[in-house]
Image (cartoon, rainbow, N blue to C red):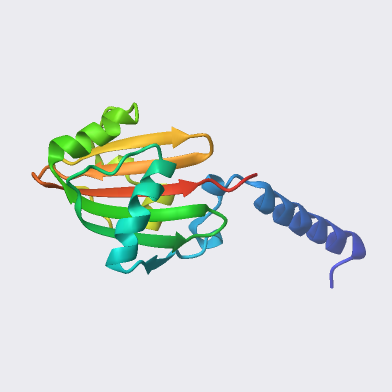
Length: 164
């Protein structure tokens, strides 16, 4: 049987652990602390209407020749305004979209796609020759992925980081 002082130490250690876990930056929490993301795809007509505004929130402009527009609104933990916008566009227009936002796209490496972005995008895989950009605006972040094809498949993950 444990003594009252041993019980007090155990309870104190548990309390400190619980407090510290709640205060850690979300990037420092383990995967089990975050919920699984859930995506709600918009119907094609609604996606075409919503895409320009969602991209504008990320500092991007939908290319004029964009087709096959898809939008998923995502729920993920405390993150807000999470959306995944996908479309097809001429590769040079897709690259210009990132350049106009002030970011030069670079060829992506597997290490780039990790953490929050990987979880929110699900089984998204980088392809050889794929370009990408990381755009940060205030507390918002956008990840842009442009395939090597022409026309290119473009995926934009946009989210607002939870307040601390």
